[in-house]
Image (cartoon, rainbow, N blue to C red; front, side, top):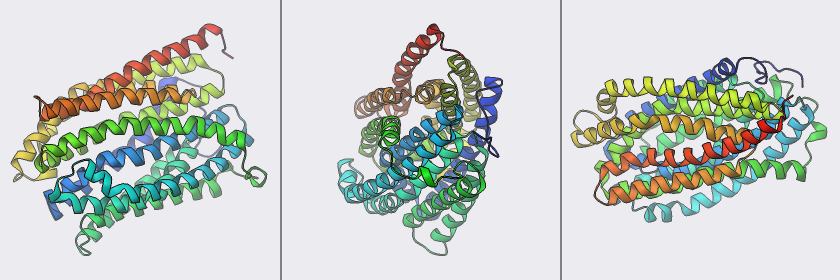
Length: 452
């Protein structure tokens, strides 16, 4: 396959250098994305009120359940693309892309319809506090109507990353993030749409990012050149995409079911606990999303090297990825130790004393266990890059169990501390399974001598 502008061949060169270079735009993109998410949280909390902040926070688990499925599936659709690119089979890349686009269109239509119809019953089932129920419902309906924009962005950005181009998706994310900040202000202050305005800003900016990725893929690269003969539906390619993509989507959703249980437990503690955990979780995500970006880089790295039949480089990539993650975990823990109270105050305001203390407590506990999250991102994404995405579903069962256990502990004697422990429990259980599967499959590959 002809080398594309901005693309990287991850089958050659130093693994740690290649992973860092490829992941850096992803890290910068997620950091900026989380920064604007934090700004969005500050605007909602300060300009609308803590009830509005709690309403947005109460949607987290449903977002995780639905949009997480979209993200996971689209990451999975990118694995056959990355393997085709690594094997230098441009015709296969095109066939996978167009069949993936057809699957994504159907997925967007089905999920949008289903989630709009189910929004109210699900919020009721989750025991969403009545004082924030209406605001939560309005926010969720707009987000669910924007599912096609999320599908467009995740699939097109994933297709570019599969070719080793992580730079342009970062640039487009940067542009859309700036738009999101501007729209947040316009749709909350001059045009007082409340939480509906915040949701609209998110959907419109993601739509722009998706369109920019599609434009670059179609017009500025040769990845899809001469594609007329590859646009027809192919049962074999669609089957392969679904076999890799849907298990990854289900893994996100199974994990998210645990988040729903956890959110229900938080909701039962009242809107003060919801607001405190929401603020802490937003700040936590700002620090852990870079680890997820490195994981996405490892997925592409493993996918290309799987296509090139280089299990030895996959092994070396795991070592490099773990070194990157655990070094970062130490830095993140130190930063949170210093900044947890100022950041929580920035989000909530000094007057929200109870919510502030809960946010500080949440960050203090969870940051000490980031090492589980960092290692999980390496092991799970290695499995996915090698094509064993069905096992990601089983790792999601571990996350479901961990978050559910945290919710039960919160409902029992531990209270809010159980909420603080829920995510680390989920990470630890999923990590144990993924580590076992990686060494099982990769070990067999290495022993068989399948190295070119």
